[in-house]
Length: 262
Image (tube, rainbow, N blue to C red; front, side, top):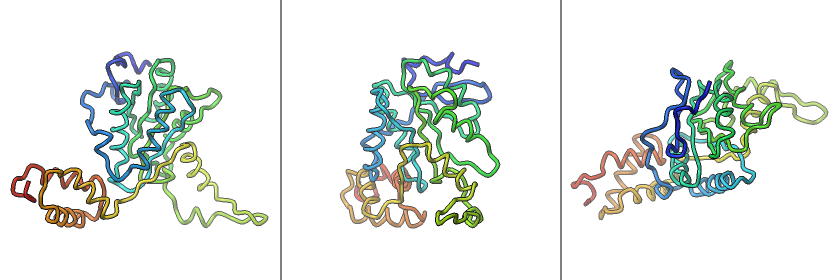
């Protein structure tokens, strides 16, 4: 099986794996989100940029897990990363969790290409009994064969350890000779996440950072007090202050001449 036969990587910055065709399809319309469009996650941006620049330069770099609360900019950061570094040779392949069984074949077909590939797994997590993570493990650290130097995995997840954690698992841990020995289930949960050398955490915005994001989206608004009041009401009605909520607020009110003196 060849996964790259239809992809001209010189002109195509990203592709997605399609199971029904058992191959890659070029992504035709990239999300245009820019690096400077993101607010409130500067620390995570800096760390991911440094790791990616090292990867592009052929220096030691890490697979990366972006984990944390929903809507806090994890996926947007990956999209902005591609837009920022595509001209420097970065290429991206999106693979759904259910298709990870195909990951070793995908990696085999791109390992000798002159591009630097990020395998992007969005909203990654595993339930009890799922085995797709085993293919991911082999790509992250290799088996008998080392993983290729031109491939890294960047994943986003709402779960820090990617797998469900149950109180019963903790109760099965025990003390031996004065040392805590985690239960096997906990070791399995942690071992997958541990293969991501760079782990970046994301949290909901404090109110001031949320309002900074709102201000960046509405630079032309004259009545800041009215804008902030409505933005806070909007976030409260959704129970979340984050980048996604700010974007949704923007889509609802942008361009309305009667809103906030626009």
